[in-house]
Amino acid sequence: AAAITINLCVTFTMIVLFRPTRCRPSSCIPFTSLLGAPETRLTALDNGLRVASEETGHATCTVGLWISAGSRYESEKNNGAGFFLEHMAFKGTKNRPQTELEQQVESMGAHLSAYTSREHTAYYMKTLAQDLPKAVELLSEVVQNCSLSEAEIEQQRGVVLRELEEVENNLQDVCLDMLHATAFQGTPLGNSVLGPSDNARTLTRQDLVDYVNSHYKAPRIVLAAAGGVNHDELVTLAKSHFSGVSFEYEGDAIPVLSPCRFTGSEVRMRDDGLPLAHIAIAVEGAGAASPDIVPLMVANSIIGSYDLTYGGGKHLSSRLARLAVEEKLCHSFQAFHSSYSDTGLMGIYFVTDKERIEDMMHWSQNAWMNLCTTVTESDVARGKNALKASLVGQLNGTTPICDDIGRHILNYGRRIPLAEWDARIDAVTPRMVRDICTKYIYDKCPAVAAVGPIEQLPDYNRMRSAMYWLRF
Image (tube, rainbow, N blue to C red; front, top):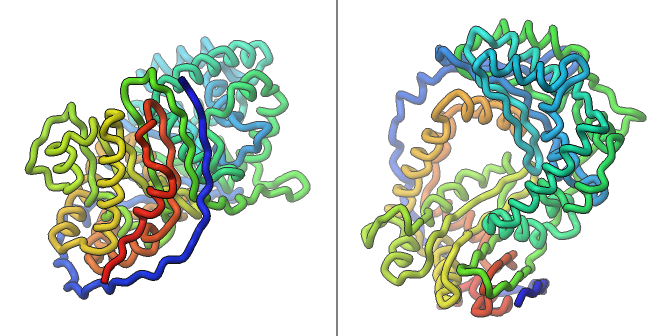
């Protein structure tokens, strides 16, 4: 049996009857190696396009274009246009047919790729440092002169539809898309990145052209590079290939992101034929530029993650992970924080047997309440160290560094160096974690998405009532 149920939360007021205790600030641990990290240089062209790079001395480099465009900029009618364009990007340009484009990339030993998210689109290439000029030229062709032939659009339409079918089998993606759809219902952040299959069947060439003309503007584009790159050379290449990118909008119709309202609600897609239940619960988080983002990152790091296939035992540092092992609560879980320009989703996603759904939901919400009320100095110290290690580990290679540069310039207008992240993490105290988590979690209506054999998932009102503790 399969059924979909949606419930909304009616907000009510609850008096908080506890007072957080005072704690000493955590000691600052110097990370002198981070202070010697290469500088990220930033230059703006006359048309507003920004060029940013970090020279690391590698024999290879990654260079790409990061654009403020994604499913949040789409309407119900053209949702999926950005993802469709990503598929069209490497199918030939007005000057180079697909065969020639592919041959040139392969002859360089390079890797050309792209991705689309809710607020960003990226086209990037990893290649030998000596081939940087050719890589920038090809990226310029791909973004500015994509052919968008009718025949190729029809061929890619089938590819996109097959990919949509494949994504439906990835229950984690399905669950998190459902979570966005219910949490930000009625707003563009509720759109999926891939868009509905009906749109994939009906999008026209003109829809794609209009999307490019509306969003691919110079002030919304960053040319980022990392590895064996010279910034001055990169700026010269940018002037040569991207000075002609328009910075003007037709009739001054500049797309402005409308606020996306968070709605406490739930959506359930019950399918008893599936072996495991996939469940996500989230509250509204902080935007990318919010000062609250770092304490929330530390809080998520305290909750941590767990996967049955990775091993581990009763001595795991995360309380929830230890319970997951001892009580066999789930197959895996992870705390997450998806941040956007002005809002976010802070939550816990877990996969479990249908008999353990209620227990896992209880202990997940209990972990949130501990963050709001009883988090300790040792918890915060452990979370801070784990977060620092994660931030460093995510920048292993020229491609993740380049991606980090591109997204930071779009989100913050500058690259935030690891040493600064490190200092901001060190400044987090247990009192700060409790106060910030109380602000975002305590007595808030959550959004819940569930897929699979979820008959035992508690009623929404029970989950809502677990978002506070009565303390005397």
